[in-house]
Amino acid sequence: MKAKINTDLTDIILELDGRITRGAPEGLSHGQASGSQQPPPPPPNLVEVMTLQTELLQQLVQGQQNQPRGHEDHILQAAGYQEFFGTHPPLFHQTDEPLDADAWLRTIESKFALLAVPCSEANKTLFAAQQLHGTARIWWDNYRAMLPADYVVNWEEFRTAFRVHHIPEGLLDRKLNEFLALTQGNRTVL
View 1: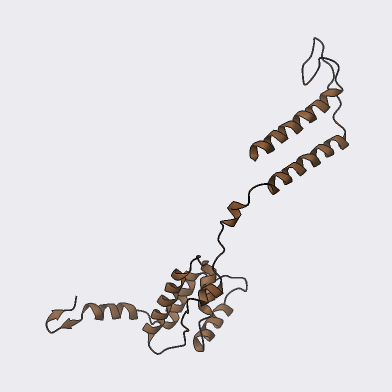
View 2: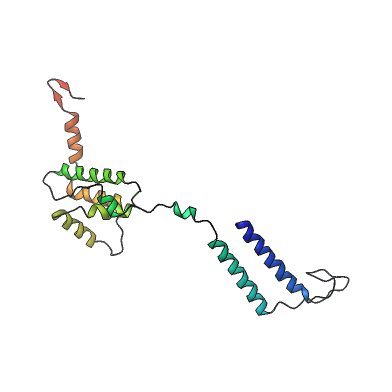
């Protein structure tokens, strides 16, 4: 397709070149001189130039319209809320047990992994926020209210803010250390 457009462009340029040299004396074209220098031929008039430009643009548009559309058909759309909701994501309400908040976040992330089509980072935040209820939703609404109106919270920022608010600092490390210290009798569990 590009070769055809290039050929068409070459033909138009040659046609324009021919129109430019048409008015030149015999044997004189584009800088060729036979002995004495002749003044250059007059430039093409505006109507000729505009006609050629219009023809060129029409051929370019026609070439773009005739290109196969197969490539565009393979571009996947990002997963929508319906696809995400179809994975049955859990709701999150404020909880007294901080580990429930971490478990909810991990479950939401596992739901994103189930989607046949990837979900954008911004949509992950929007979809997860729809699963917040009660005081958890109030927290999110207040968090968003502190940001500029057009600011987009990406997934990593949401995760970090969610953990900071719902999981006390150091709790996960403390739980990991408790797990590593588990013993049965005088033997470690690991």
